[in-house]
Length: 310
Image (cartoon, rainbow, N blue to C red; front, top):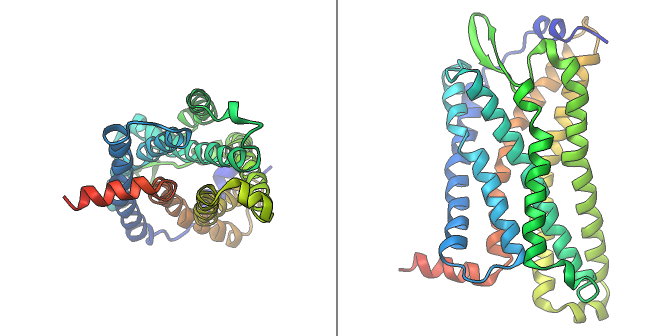
């Protein structure tokens, strides 16, 4: 195994693009994400009298998104100041922790929504006992516990450091810790992304197969059919734009940084830039996730339009 510190420090990569791309991206996500998720939580807390299982999962999804959105102002200042971190080591650890907690909580609650939709379409009578609000609340609590357990090590790995006498906040960990971080990073990818992604894929394949049968489609009903199709489309868009590219580039970056020979920096430069470009894009999940709230229930759209018309 090569010395990761030497790999990173010996390859100089121009990152001037970050001073424009990252503040702009994070600012858009902050404004749009705060607005949309704020509306979702306001609708749930102030305008919804009867909560369903889907509403419980969507509320937790909005909370997960806000966890990330509210930490973005620190990163906006950080990159506007030309990578000068002014918020201390604790602030750095918390920002990284909130990002990964929000990311994997979002994936887990999208998984919960997909499984709930799968049961409602494929086994509406046989599994009716597994679609109660009590199950949804217990499932949400378990999901948050799993996320905290998965992401807790980021508080130990994330830290500040000095580059050219300038304090920076490392995203994954310090360069000399990459060898130790790599097994954890791969484990996090598998448990936080790959397994939920496989579950969601199985659920959607089963839903599509069920809906494609004419007799089953009649049994399911047009309303559930529309909701299922909307869920599949939105979740697939989220994974295609945000989660899949991010995890692929992140995995390749970690592997190259740890295992590639020191003599050739071209590959490392390419994968490093690819990862750092997709790193802010993954935050757009906080803007797309709230769309599910408005698409899964026609009454939600009606209430929003009524409030806007006042």
